[in-house]
Amino acid sequence: MEQLNRSMIIQGKENFLNGKEIGFQNTKMEERVLQFGEGNFLRAFIDSFIDMLNEKGLFNGSIVVVQPIEKGLIDALNAQDGCYTVLLRGLENQVPTIKKRIVKSISRGINPYTDFDSYLENAKNPNLRYIISNTTEAGITFLNTDKLDDKPPTGFPGKVTVLLYERYKHFNADSSKGFIFIPCELIDNNGAKLKETVLLYAEKWGLPKEFIEWIHTANHFTSTLVDRIVTGYPRDEAETLSKELGYKDNLIVTAEIFQFLAIEAEKEVSAEISENLPFHKANLDVVLTEDVTPYKQRKVRILNGAHTMSVLLAYLYGKETVKEMMDDEYFVDYLKKGIYEEIIPTLDLNKEDLESFADSVFDRFANPYIKHYLLDISLNSVSKYKTRVLPSILEYHKRTGNLPEKLTMSFAALIAFYKGGSHKVADDEEIVTFFKEQWEKYGMSQMDQLVQNICARKDYWGQDLNELPGFSQKIAEYLKKILERRAEA
Image 1 (cartoon, rainbow, N blue to C red):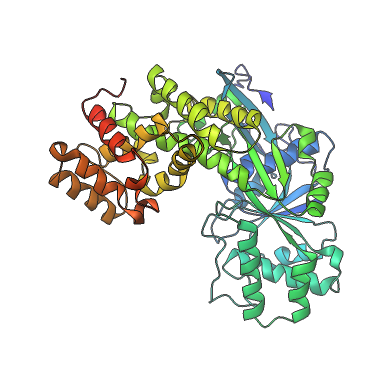
Image 2 (tube, rainbow, N blue to C red):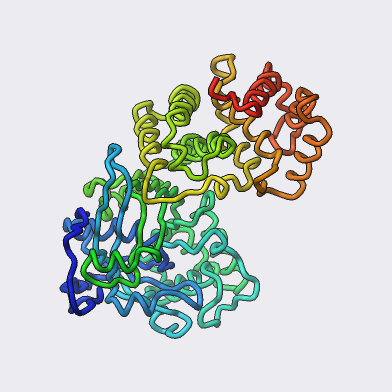
């Protein structure tokens, strides 16, 4: 990545990022990766990683991108010769930083809805080894209406099954011609889910048992954890950025600087990925592991947990965005104590690794280039609290016998926020109604009963929190302070 040169303004004719006109022609390396999804996330994430590997001579392969739904960006991508600009913007050691890369790792894009034959032809490429995807959380879904002879099947896993079957036939069941799948959809165990769905299609379509066995033995479905905020096409800044860059890019994508990828795979598969896609040699934060769970826990407890423990309280105290919260000394101190003194002691990864990740959270939260509204983050806070914060409270109590002060206060903030009033509480209707009824019935005058009733909802929290010694009493105490605007105490 190079620092963005803000003096690079070209006057006169508007140039487009399409190779010849501004000298960034795609080098068209051997096609070794097939990718489902041409959206912002993959282009600002793993496509950029592969471009960095190619730049250092560590991969020397390109990506064929498949448009997974009927309408998409493939025509725009091909019009720019597969090239586009990634702008990474954020804080590095508290210093505002912008980094620019013109990504050239994509050789071409295919729309299987208009050129199915070109899509299927990829099955015959002996050099193709990796399949990457990001087709949204709903992408890995079995569609009973899909058929083997559809051109193409509607669902992403259906398209994959057709491709696998064509490859199986073309290479006569050669076990060395399977794929390594690296799905980036934001669901747990995404690789296992993709494999399960592909097998459902193979069985429904009555494909040979030998082919199903080949899916099991010749192909490897890794599961992943991805972490980077991608803010996408900067519509409000496009004209200004075009002047600064010196060319117009219809596919420019902006993202934060932070990046992390964990790939869960068997040792043999991890070894192959490490050798052929040596992300570590490009100083990319990519971990190959047999169990991605600790890294998921780190992200959920520290990053997501920090959001959930702070944004409701910050909103009650007049803040509107995460950046405004991070500009307030009180909230920075609140987060530091909550993360370093209460969350990290409940986790079992290397302490140095946990603290390094926590350090990055503060730069990410204070990113001046991202406007993250607290009310947007507050969506479904009850279920978020159960998965992101409550496990830290319970584990802290288990290990120390005490209640973590800041995390406990955040539960009181949730109850205060769900009182409603000038702001809308965005959650399931039943949950919103329950909190409203409790506040109307008990309110400030019977706060102990109010808190006890909320803590007793096993369906919300997975257990009766009144059974956690001293918890409901502490919540009532903090709740009173929050409502009296004395949380600073």
